[in-house]
Length: 412
Image (cartoon, rainbow, N blue to C red; front, side, top):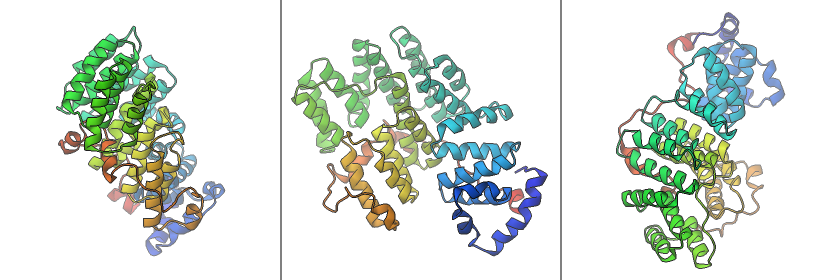
């Protein structure tokens, strides 16, 4: 890594201290936030690197930002700060950093993706397309950019462009379920219900046991007045995975004569859905780094997205970041039918892991008597469509977390 002479001069004594004492980082971690700016550049950088290897996104973000303030022209430090801030869910700050990253490297696809997502949130759809077309470079990023771009055309007058973009995308077989599902969602939102129905029928034939497919198709049938057909779709899923809260809620709504709401109701929430689906699947494939970024971007567009929140908490559990997982479970909207499952999961995580008692005491609503409202396998249905195919497909997943030190880094 190419640091400024100021950084290299400051780094040598700190590296020596870290080499002699394993207690150096805990001491730095205990500092109050106001002291970060008084820590040396190298101290903040090394603390950030350690936090990155521990997958502590919050600490990594804080230390990298402090280091960058002291070495503001260091482009590689800028890139690392950008990724750490993004992984911590600070998307507005990450967007500002992305603009600086692109001045140094106009081909940085993650920076392009972030700016594209920000433009979608601001409903600046042409600007979003410009950024997204420059964020592609592989099977996952190509699919993500195509789906997000399609959602920028989710209006009655522009659905033709949305569908053309989706349909012309070629790639692995597992693309099909994403393409048909999102084409159907876009068409239904645009009011083209007959065409939407045809897309839903196709995707349901591809995988009738995928949660989001079942929700989209069953909900569509109910809104068209086909109550019996809708219940048939939901009950078939319920036989495979009994008492899933979202499916139970949909059946209760139909039986009570209530309207089953659309799965997505705007272009930003449609884009959030696409990012959630891909992020959830990547997290299960071993691509936690990119999966984390997609999930954070999904929540930036739709902060209360229950499935994105649960998938993010699952990801934190998988990398043994218990308190982060509990914090995410706590963010689930009280009105969500998934909240009971989230409370059960948070309770299970807190009791099976060593968590500071001060953190446990906050959750007075947790009770040993809480029971899951679905079988333990309910989480397997939260990932994206065709997850099993995607997870088994040979592909290269970009690593975007803080990289391991290079030989030159280690030697100063």
